[in-house]
Amino acid sequence: MDGHMGMSDFYVMNGEGSIVDLKNSAEPFSASGLKSCPSCRGPLRNLNRYGRIVRRALIDEATKKFIVWANKGFIRLVTKMQAIEAGLRETAGGKQQASDKVSPETPLSGPFQLQGDRDHQISQIGTLTRKENRYKTIIALRREIKKFLQQVNEKEQPFGRIYDLAQDARSHRGINTNLHSNVDILQVRNRLLTTVLLIRCDYTILLTFINDRKGETSASSCGVEVDLRANRRECERLIAESHSENQPGNTVEGHLYWARFFALERGLMEPGSELTQLLADAREHLQHAREICDKYPGQTAGMQEEITDVEKMLRDSTFYMPVSNEEKAAVYAAMAHDFRGTGHWYYCENGHPFTIGECGMPMETSRCPQCGSPVGGQNHRAAAGITPATDLERQFGGLGI
Figure 1 (cartoon, rainbow, N blue to C red):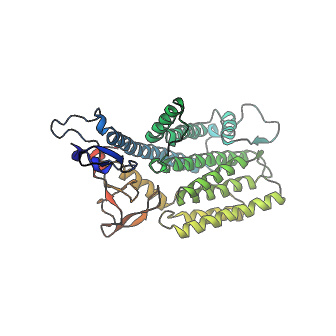
Figure 2 (figure 1 turned 120 degrees about the vertical axis):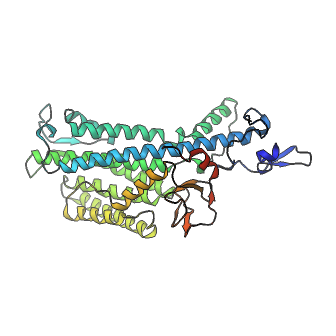
Figure 3 (figure 1 turned 180 degrees about the vertical axis):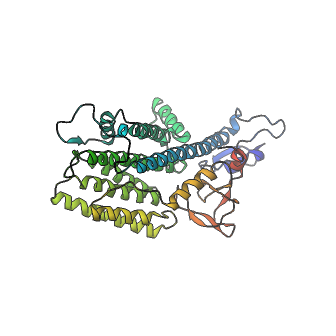
């Protein structure tokens, strides 16, 4: 039974088969799936001797299920966001129906001041446009995105919950030593992607509102005073964390939206030294974005065109809704396709799972979204350190997700 459970992979054993020491720290995805008794096929969860191995496998299994669930949820939200953006583009330029135009229930005595944190900004717009279907739809989607962002937070993931429970138990027993948290198993990619999606949603709402106000007021003023410092700070936090987590695509998104928010604010600001400095900062953000795209072309495909578009916004003092480039749309389509159970699952050299669609064999090399190590390969040959995730294939192969 010890051989069946792979005890020698986790413990140092003496000649009599007794455990004398731990062999490793039960690294993430080190257990080869949940095993049952080879004789009766019964579960082994209640045997204390194998408790550590079984619990490791349970955490791994729950984490893999979380990855699939989170990806499915993100793709659903992105799809809804793209549909709403397409509808808003169709009604841009004063083409919307009269029932969809901004018409405050209480006439404004002066310029509408849009300021505070991001939630407060959207709350202000929602109050002013509560009877308009266009705003109802996208603000409802924003609530969905915020809820999903909380659900994919590291503390809500299987390992994060277990870590918090263990820390709580240790504190109640008077043990002050912190557990060593292996952050590699925590899936940060979906949270960062969802953070970008929430920023994108906020930008779309703000852009639509300001354009609508421009359409109903004089050409010299749109009747709105904005302060988007909170939005730019959020972009700076996204940039810092994405960089630390080796997520170049999300890092570029942070730089792009910093400049986009400034472009929105610039059209409503009075000329001065502050405006000049912010313009220089925005151009610096775009320069950093270009450098990242040059360094990681595979993970930032199509984003050079977005940088050019934002540079034009700054140069022409205009602003408009970004259009998803073909490369990014292809990435979302691939994510939706791969996580439906098609293709094949693999582990990178650090044990992070990923999928390869189509025939399931590698044809190009990329980087692991979790740790940056090489994934994929060339000509149906996997890169060094890549191993098939046969346990994940058994668990998720063929699922309709």
